[in-house]
Image (tube, rainbow, N blue to C red):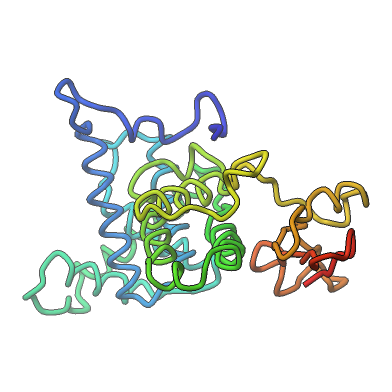
Length: 286
């Protein structure tokens, strides 16, 4: 797994103190991102907009010192901005009410007084500040579509009973969500994070991928490239060598002229082939 850059943002989130404990800033970021996640769920946000809000928050504090601005105000503005970026618009009043209930569980909703309007103006002004600091680069590529693609592929490879018996999918999604507590989303590529959380979920339950011992490369090193870019010889080599085995050819390109397709939204449609017993190189695409 390679980092995006040698001086990638988010490296400070993994800093450790003298006793091996997370640095005070890392603990603050952990609590604030937990607030973003809980508030996002209460606001009805999907997983990708919540991930965008966490990424905006982490990227902002890569540029600005933590003591300069209130991190929870930045978190509220991150939720507001992420809703616009991911086209799931939120009202500032809803963000304020959910945040107030988070900090004061037994309190009453805020009245529409001067305090409410001052907080609303602070969220809007902080949003404009964040856009300037981040140079309006607030659109990110998240691991979610890659993880979904890998899970669909892996489900077809594994034994059906092994897949149903172990919550690999649930664990992988939980690990991906927890990764946004730190700066991993800024330090590593989305594809690498998706493979890493899936590999960790498999290790946690001791599940082995079939035919991994006979494979030339570990499953997580296989590159999923469009099958139309492969030569016929490469396609034959990618197919299973033994009769009755399932192999992966790669991913299909979008089928519509505008570049969108359901396969593209899933990270690409997995193309597999089945070698029939006793029929040589007769490959059956699935």
